[in-house]
Amino acid sequence: MPLNERNAMSSFLLHALRRQPITIQGDGIPLRSFLSGSDLSIWLLAMLARGDGRVCNVGSQIVFPLLEWAKKVLACAGLPEDFLTVQGQALHGNAPDAYVPDTSLARSVLRLAETASPEENILAALNWFRAHPACIPAVTEHKRI
Image 1: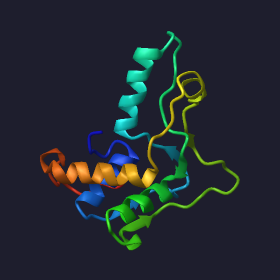
Image 2: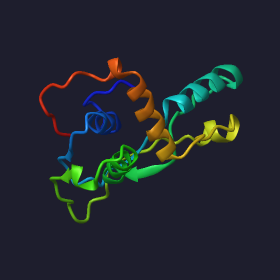
Image 3: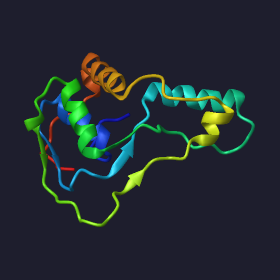
């Protein structure tokens, strides 16, 4: 996963690696799931090798609000929670946005699942980027998500 400001998890990881604060401009309640790169590779290979031609969604069924994902990244990076600011407020009565793929076909037919906990996957990503610092984009202006 390239580290950039285009999606929440890569932005959270980038800020943690740079030891920069994370700012969530919204309320932090939109629900998201994240599948690790290693699980993505396993899933795609399984679909190529064992798939029957049906279209299967790829993704994790482990879901948290963006605020919780940011807290997990900070904890895994050894950074304090006060590195996190949430600027927005929730709109009462509205359901949070949720981006969670229906992976039931891949799970039932190909017997696929996540292979590690979210924290293990976050630590693995942080450790990989720490071992490959050239893959961490240079610091530019501070952007908020």
